Image (cartoon, rainbow, N blue to C red; front, top):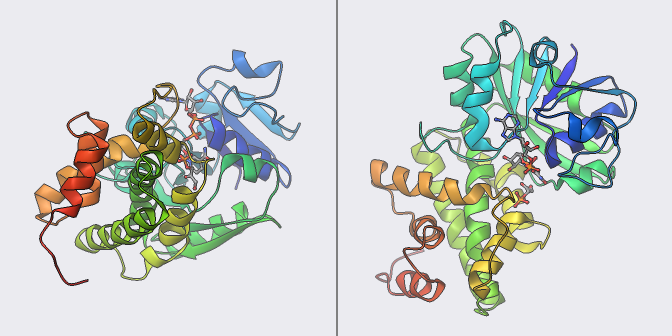
Length: 316
Ligand SMILES: NC(=O)C1=CN([C@@H]2O[C@H](COP(=O)(O)OP(=O)(O)OC[C@H]3O[C@@H](n4cnc5c(N)ncnc54)[C@H](O)[C@@H]3O)[C@@H](O)[C@H]2O)C=CC1
Ligand SMILES: O=C(CO)COP(=O)(O)O
């Protein structure tokens, strides 16, 4: 089973580097000119792709591989799926993006099923910064696939001595953990940036986690998936590290500073999608909804804080 990574940003490049240490990898990029001489992605400068990685802009060639790692930003995933013309029956399409599609209101596994119905969808998610993976630092991730045989095969194929994949059959739970932790990370960054303190951040992480569990349960996830790497694990990393773009975006909101719009911040669109799902399913998601309002300029950080603190008292 050959492997290709579709999307040559920071994460796709890091995955290609990690897998390229043990097997040949095809890396598809929209624009290869920026990479072919340097063998580096502008999104992950300083990391050079090994010779085992073939860089191509031929999507047909890349999509002929049996395992496809989809590493474009979430709001670009449906467009990429529609561009794949190669038959995908029997191919594993592994979503590596974290988010909820704003137009269709679903996560990556449902998007794969809708746009490439012959393929077997899977989800790779969990606490991992691209730079850490590229450096070969130890990392543990969740590989979720509802087809057991495919899940086991992809788990074995993508695991390396330092990249340890745990298998799950709960794609909904795994992908919602990865999507929603970005929203809570924006809230935590805003909290720290505005000087509201570590205690407030701990409260946001905990109450945010409760929202993740609540929405995931309503959408059919298994109860314990959110406590794993893809949920609590990634929430912990992203809400506490300056390496996180979502957290840094929140910091800039809290400080009232501008933020580079070219940086991928998945949590902003996911907050909007989550706020809509909260309305559709009549589930209270106050932190996600506040982040949605904050990132769309409908609330200031102070107003968001006041909105959360003035809610009626309730049982934990
Ligand atoms: N960077 C990280 O540490 C991690 C990122 N992820 C996830 O991976 C996904 C991708 O993020 P990054 O690689 O970090 O983003 P990035 O901003 O570094 O790169 C995105 C790449 O996608 C390309 N792209 C955008 N639209 C495209 C399209 N329609 N067709 C082809 N290529 C397109 C861009 O040219 C760019 O190279 C996100 O969902 C993110 O949450 C997951 C784990 C870690
Ligand atoms: O998903 C990630 C870590 O697991 C990367 O987080 P950011 O997208 O916030 O940088």
